[in-house]
Length: 159
Image (cartoon, rainbow, N blue to C red; front, side, top):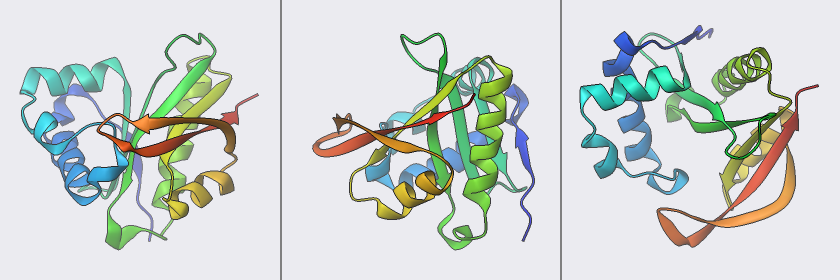
């Protein structure tokens, strides 16, 4: 099944919000944010999040979401965040399409590296990222929303 991916605009804020909230409800231990925190965001906050970063949705209605942001402290780096695919759609290539969209954005934006954090123990996600060219860096940190859980940094060179 083909799920077209498109970059979201500020006018897509309702769809972005609905999909992101589904993601946070589905996998609360996979993100550095919480459902309660993002449910409280108003329209202006959602519009700003979308316009300040590169948000991509797969399908209409969306069955997957990913976001690209500048890598803090690294002018050549970009960061993949908020990656999620609806459970019933996993294994259909949606993740590949979303990562490809973020990679294309990162390259077009001048990025030379794309990083992400994956929760330790999320073997399926880690294998997906490895298949898509990411490698573990050896860096680990506590998950911001649950310091008892750790996550590992992965990196893909874009040049």
